[in-house]
Length: 328
Length: 203
View 1 (tube, one colour):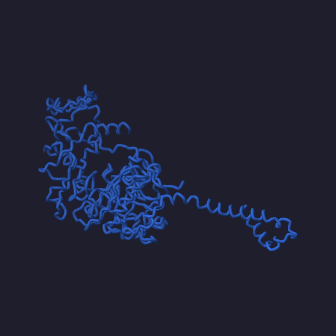
View 2 (tube, one colour; view 1 turned 120 degrees about the vertical axis):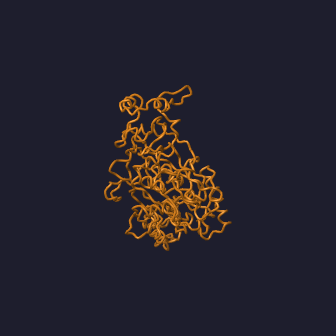
View 3 (tube, helix red, strand yellow; view 1 turned 180 degrees about the vertical axis):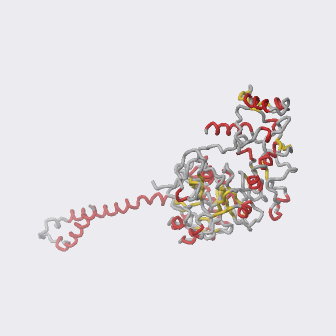
């Protein structure tokens, strides 16, 4: 319809010089009122189509504020900047979710590098860790998002490529193992090297962090991660006000904006204050071991030194900080 | 299997209510490590590991299934019967099992009651060599056979825990064996898994 209108307008424009003549042969072009009407209709249709095509952008514009747009990269923020930004996030969360929260940013502890080990012998696949992650990290409650996925695999071979994620029968089933996978916090992270904006980086304590305000949502990192541990925020998480976790970290579990990547951060706001991650505390089987890799007396070091430990997708040379082991 | 699960649930929630007892300094601690690099926490006495311990036999006893006027379950203390039964006559035990211990199915290898429970009052345990073990130290009893599990437990690689990984900053609470395992039929009960993680989709 638009094209036809435009074509007819162009045809008329070719005939334009003659149209002013009252004695023109063209019976259509001698009517200036009709031409003007067609031009106006064409322009209206064109602008209408443009407006219609841009209409879905309105919700992004509504979510943007100047402060968010002009924010510096996390590493360049001063203490005063952070204070101002955290206050703005707290206010925004209260406005949108009706929950009073406290945004903080605990610094990495010196002499600490986090390591995580998971005992595949004792994991029973109950997905309590998945649930704890959902609650702790302000995930969408209707979509049941979480950073942890649990594969159900056959006992022999430990091959997660043949694993099932959607099991819903009582667990544990004899002869099967359960294989939780989350961000492995690699020492050679492919997601960091592909990021075009440096919105994700490796912290001194080994955590691969994301600056949600700096991420442009290109999803290169999701494509690069061999563990499929990165997720895209397709829309604003829907959380009831009483379920919003009030203890929020700027780099970790604050309510993420739409259109950015997110992933497991070892519960950065908890572990940097010395606490265990939420998934470990929720594990009823005690299959998870967390600790400081630089402390030779830590539990994680005992596991690495005394148990048969393996890492996932070793051939990718990602050097994960996440280990799997089998009890002897 | 639901019967097993129910029984395990009953044993875990009713028979072994965990009293949050503190560590007894006289016995070996589960994880005996000093506070790392002598932080302030060590001076303030922080960084303790509180290992939960089973309740004493005095508050356990036989669950009768009846409830008193205030709705609390009525229990019969072990000594009520086991004070009198001191002989090693196996028939006595078998009869007693049938009538009183109907809710206990012993499916734990080739164990008998006396493998763990100690005469005369059944309030304590005994090791294989007859050494008495109080209820709180049940992990030593289990560790006689499950030595590797005990080794893992003592090094923090087995058993659930909450609190602080950094013991300079706070305390840690640990489960004991009977928090998760039913000693009479130690198979893991089946549980219904929580909802799985779904990737968010554009709608």
